Amino acid sequence: MKEKNRANIRHSFVFYAAAELICLCICRLYVLPVPCGIFMGVILLAFLPKWRANRRKCILEDKRLTDAQIYMEQLLYAFMRQQKLLSAIEEVLILFPEGNMHKTLQSAMHMIRYDYEEEDVMERELKKIEDAYENDRLHTIHTFLYKVERIGGECDGMITLLLRDLNGWRKRMDIYRGDCKKARHNVVIAIFVALFVCFTANSILPARIDISDSGVRIGSTIIFMVTLLFIYTRMDKKLAVNWLMHGADDGAYGLADKYNSYLAYDEKKERRLSVCLSLLPIAVTVFFLSKQSFLAAAIAACVSIILFYQHKIGHALAKKNLSREIEKAFPKWLMELSLLLQIENVQVSIAKTVPTAPEVLRPALEDFQKKITANPEEALPYLEFLKEFSLPQIQSAMKMLYAISMGNGGNEREQTAELVERNMNLMEQAEALKNEDALAGMYLLFLAPALIGAVKLIVDMTIFLLAFFVQAGNL
Image (cartoon, rainbow, N blue to C red; front, side):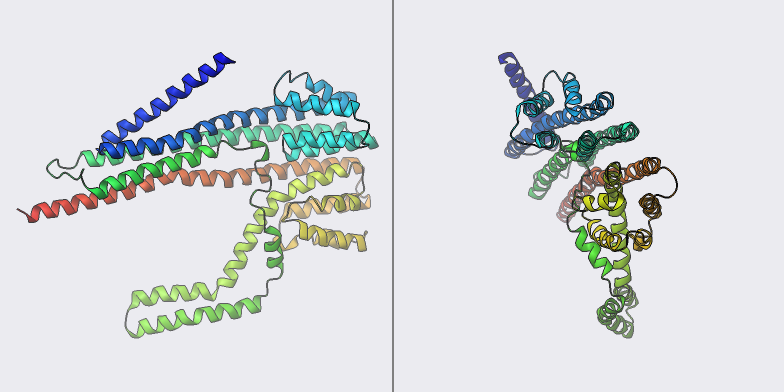
């Protein structure tokens, strides 16, 4: 342990020393005064602990993700063989001779074996494992296996489908994490390119016009460097995240209100508001036309047109955003429903999923549940579910769900398995959308150094031109 601590101290010293040396070299290249170089060194010193903490967290979260994936996969295989959850957990424990997963599973097994005070001790201990490794799939697998053990029934087919889903998720996560690491490398390259371009632009300026002592140039250089440090820190933080919780309803708060607002849209009322908002720009357009200011009149006219149709534009954007969120949330709900269908009928399964459903689906599901409770054999509630958003995958899944509820179309177990298999394709598309959204933000960080570098160049060139004109005027 002492040797390990000494190694960590040596590593930390080398890391801090190398970072400060690079900072000093960059400050000298940019001809910053010694006090400014010291100031930048102190600023960098404030960032370095955060970078090291991110690195440690990144390693930890990678390990947690790998452990959770192995645990879920091997638990399914073990349960398929033994049909006993405790025996399956005991078999999986052998794969983790040490570490946090070993402690978590060992504690859970001990409590399950020796705690006789609570009837639902198994469910409680499974919940503790889920709390240690928060993941929707882990919860789904635990819930399904626990209910199968209690109620019984054939489960090999569903376990095979769950293993397929788990394998697909692992591949998508590997691709996404690889893309994140590439994005970080690209940001590092963009930062060094921005530093090199700004240094080169300053070094090729005529030597007889020296702007190195300009306070504005020194200040802009410090701001430029500190901004680049913030950009890298922001990018670095995106890799030090809980991968197990990636895409789990993040940013979904308030979607139920947006969904209800979309349904409550009153076109006549919104049109009247749009007309009122466009009156002033129309008047401004007429005024500029009377003054023959055609450019200003054109701008005012464009504003008036946008305001006149703002209600349609806003409604269309709301539909597009909600459709995207629904496409991401629906497969998660359908997977939970499909597993419940192994042991419950359609109406009961739907009722049990409503409280834990994604927020964007909850209002529609509550209304849907009321309709099928009042008319269990009516097809219309299934056909009208989320029809406002014209999502064919959802309409197809709901038609199949109706067929299962009525016992039509063949073996109910085969139909449910087909529903789960179709849902896996939807989940793949939904997770691809989530990964695409996350990577879009990283791409903006890749563009940021170029933008900051361009601003820095504009400031330096402006200072140079002013110095040039001053020197020319003194001749």
